Length: 244
Image 1 (tube, rainbow, N blue to C red):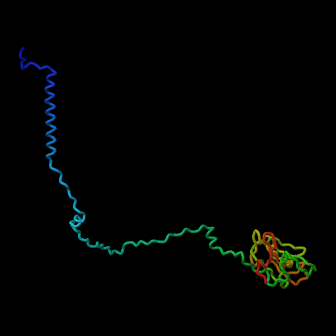
Image 2 (image 1 turned 90 degrees about the vertical axis):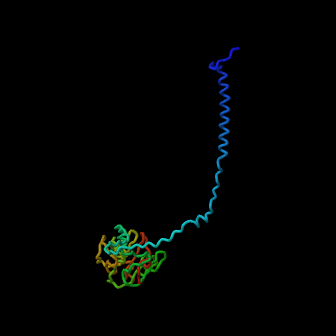
Image 3 (image 1 turned 30 degrees about the horizontal axis):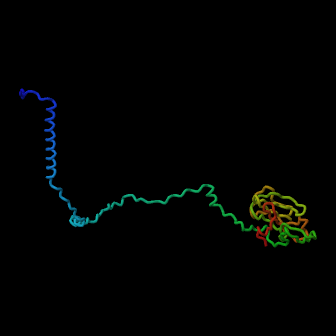
């Protein structure tokens, strides 16, 4: 059998089998060496935390700072700032007029009497009273105020003369409209009347003088026949006007 020359190539399978054994052996040695190196490292020292009280006690103390003093300038020429009150808005014209207008009379206030005197024949709308002139019992939706003939008759409230006429029973009559729902009637006047329908009158304006023109009341003493209407209905004048 012939000897193999050293330069002759070994078969391919034999070559990889020999090198594979050597490689595995080298890898095992490397792993062992790494394990020995890791076990030889020094152990980590445990760090002990110092108590918080010791840290605070060892901290350097800071001295209190002196109070801060500010020296203000003594210059009095600086402008002075004044805070003025906020101006209130002026009321609207309608509001201003209401504020300055004279207060209206309360609902319970009474007007002044048209003449000075006492009631000689009272108001009777729901009952009958005796009439000397007619010699019978009748209603009377007004009051008769006794006063001398020729006495000036004054308007009790401001308003507009609505009508001046001669009534068949009450004689010369003046009606004054004071508002949309209030009117007053003055009768048994003299024929001479100084006002006309449409005239504007005030409280106290003379409407005429007391006469003797009321035929239905001619048996009574001299007087003014006075009536008060609210919403077209006669009411007791003594509840609205100061009489007597």
